[in-house]
Length: 124
Image 1: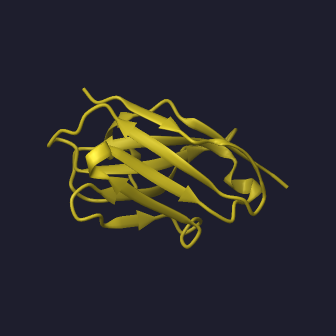
Image 2: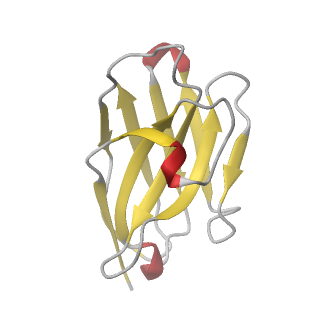
């Protein structure tokens, strides 16, 4: 079992930045990739970004490409999401997830472990 704990959310003005962190309780060979998803009130959970533990290949949703950057620190079992140029429509609960597959996938059902989420609120 892998526990994921997110941090770094908060209230920020439009155009601002945050860095979200997701620390895994342990790194196992069964975890090949990490992802970030978000869910706004009244909307379905949507894919944001993903990264492969080995090699660091990344994948982004079109809506965040160029503004968000996903990275990882293998030694700390931590994945980061740097969110820049924030817009009010980025307001959501951001969730970290871990997948067993060794590819960066946007499909939520391919992720086996999920964190509790961290709230990001962007004011206009």
